Length: 270
Image 1 (cartoon, rainbow, N blue to C red):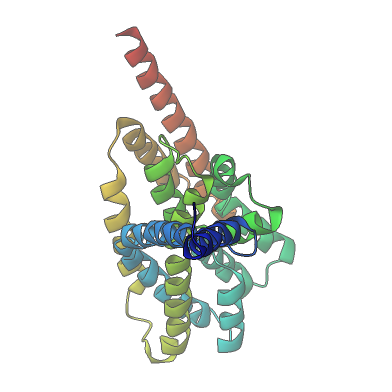
Image 2: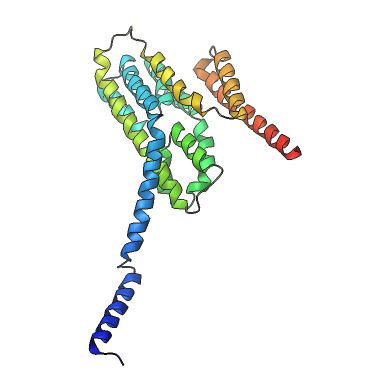
């Protein structure tokens, strides 16, 4: 037989359980167990991108200086920085802008240089297809080379069971990369007036990028891809509109895929 106190305690427990499962009152342990996991994934992405961010800020700083040195005003350089999150496309467009090239040619050159992002987007689609197109578009804007490389290194062969884990890790890589690029590119725009033309800052940016890319070359297909694309890019320097870069991208992809296929075939025969 239950006393009044027992009935009151049971009623409170029942009321708590009822509140815990209602949409408007999610259980406290649910919110606390989910958010820390997402935050940890975000921090994991941030930690992974800290090293490569050295190259990002160097490249952004040099790009900011190059825009003003090419004849753009500080206002136009700032607008270009905020709207065009693509250093290679910016540096490709600058000599064409200086030469008063047609607008279609400038867009075509930028498309050619960044054609690799079509491949990146196709590879990332299975991990983000559960999102709305607006959110996929936002992630596409934030995505950069290192975002793709670090994400595929982590989830390329071992996708997470929870699709949202992919997004939080990607944001941990992408947001710091975007912020650092914007900040240092704008600093380059401001500092351009104090930098003499004799300073070879472009060479420093290339060295910074090499310092990030070289440690990522860990497999034979990647070695083949890098070697073939480097040779083709060097041989294609005389081509107009920097078409040598497009040929280098295509040749590197084909060489890498062929090397990976041959390696997979060799493992299958064993």
